Image (tube, rainbow, N blue to C red; front, side, top):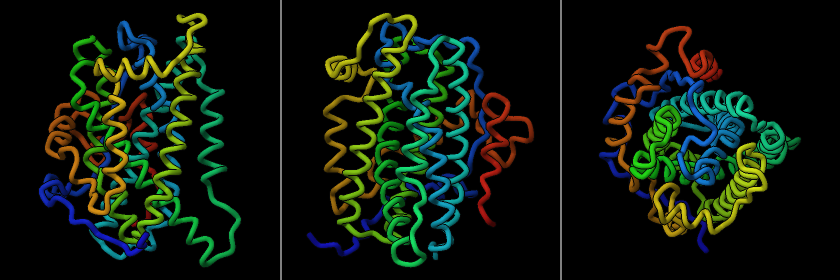
Length: 327
């Protein structure tokens, strides 16, 4: 298997800069959870809890993204890409804070996520965290491994973002509008910045063997953490005594359109592993920015113009704005 770096051409019309002369920007958001029930997707607590795993994985995962990307900034020699990465960092910090704000609400409803989030924190901070390595080749190797893992994970977050923007069955089922707006705001930004992580990987490394190896790592980790999180939610739901999660429920929810289908998830694997793959080939930037312009939670604003005191739960804007990226 050749390890020669390939640089598939992006779809030019899908580059974020053509839609926003300011480039990629974090948006200040505000969500209120007082009226959102535990079973926010009526009639299907399993599908709702499967999606709820996002609130457990994303805060730690996206803070890890930010941490790794701060370390890789000195390796970026393309100024436009560097600006996109800085914007990506701001958006990911906002995502982490917004999903973090859901967790106290879940606890008030009788489902304490702390035992699971502690495991997720360990996974990102210890297993995928910084290691005591000598400066030079070994330390750079570990940094590039993590940059490649993030590119693989972002393939799936963009896949999920595109799915939720088009998941009309959630509307038909009467999903809680606040939760749906959070998911679609986040999903739209994942579609909007879907090329950044891959472009960064191709810029600083681009090795195909590394892309395949780290895809396998990311896919295995996401599968393990997601099924574990779903089981945690279902088995600890105070309104579902003795309930169990199963693969049958997952397949059924996919067929019904309230979760991504198993077929679409499997088809995403060869897509990412294709040597001609580029994230701009999937999803629609125009659809994403159109949703962001009308999202009640995002209000069409950005972190730059939202002012003080905004943000999810009253604190997200400040947390995301202060992501410590050097100018």
